Length: 631
Image 1: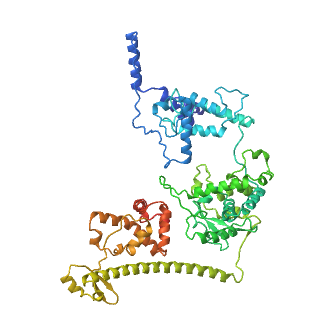
Image 2 (image 1 turned 180 degrees about the vertical axis):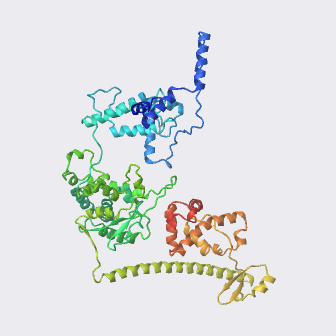
Image 3 (image 1 turned 135 degrees about the horizontal axis):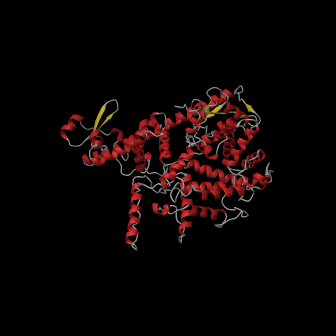
């Protein structure tokens, strides 16, 4: 038997096709080779047609879609992201182009599977052609003055999100129509025209220059209001120092910046990333430590207990339960920049470094580009800038990156030092400033003692009012009991044992170094109806309302005298328990109520707050049912 040579072995071994070609072949086999049932039905229909002559052929068997998990998405503002909301606009625009109804479809329109399966690559391609060229047929000399290359890619992604068969490409009349040669060709044509200066102008915002940023700070500080003079310049330098977005700046909380663990002259802040260092700058107009200190001094004086660093408000959306306060300050900041800075003739007169990049103008994202560009010009690598700017970078799936930590203190501090205009500096206390620091600490302690004293005096005031009410009722009862004479009104009553044995009236026991039993004074163990504020709820719990017994003194029998009273007490006890926990932690009752209102909304009724606290018990069960802002 002849021994096979090496060449024969290589010839016999079939080369393995790449994975991409194997997937394409499986898709072709899936659509080109019908199942046995479908083939048998088609053969029977062909035989019946031959046998019957003019008889109509049998219809194709219906396809069974049950269990595939597809369902047309619902337009729900509470659950959809910003991109997904835009997907509905593009899908309705495509179906309006396809069906040509009298009125455009609204985003809430629900399309069936059958309607979506009628879409073909030609329909999608013609829709894109109308959006880009304004006509269905375009030639090499036509300019694409409508949608740009990146916009067409986003439109393709949006339509593909709704398709029942979104994963397989278009083959033999089935699959995803956006994954077809016709759609890919028009996108490639638009990209080619843009490279030849025959496309629509770019609306991408260009980076700011240092001269423009300095002018922005100057124009802001010339305004008469506190926000333009102090708040917004501090936010601008904060965004520049962190190479952040305007949205990131507005979402920073008051507890994020804190003292550095290693360097006493620096701060650090954490926002969904490892701690990042904050250094001082030699130029006072760009020194974040100096601006932040001035801002916090005035900000905390007016708002002692805010949640966010740059906004004192809390606005919980009633549907999505998302705090909209950061978005509100972001929109206000953007509008102030447009009105005060970007629309001024002085800002337009500043010379731009690259006129070709001036087509899209400037925006809030121009400031992040300016910071990244400034750090790059200082000699930092792209990796170091990514670390400072908290960009997420794809690392190719290499195993080594699973063992390398995310915290890069050296790169972060190096870029931060370059972003300190004039060079990074270190602040030190001068002689005599310790007294100022001690004075500030004592002032804070005095403020805390004043709040506690006020709370104690309020408690004594409510107790005095209840006591006076009891005395007036006792006086009236005694006058009626003794014939209306004043002398008889001051007669002391019998002891508690005699009263219990001889009269049906309840008594009230007062402990003032000795027990005195006085007849006819009973504090009703009743809860008020429909309290209008959390302050009334707390007073009802601690001191009682309108002469009633404080809820904290209710016995078990009084709390469960009926099912309605038990349910009312149980609901209100969630609020009482929350306020009491915050008071035990060192807050005053006023501050505790402010925290609850900020968490659940200032316009939310007390009854609704009770329900929301009860729901949070189940949501945050791992933290004893306490939300993060109330811990």
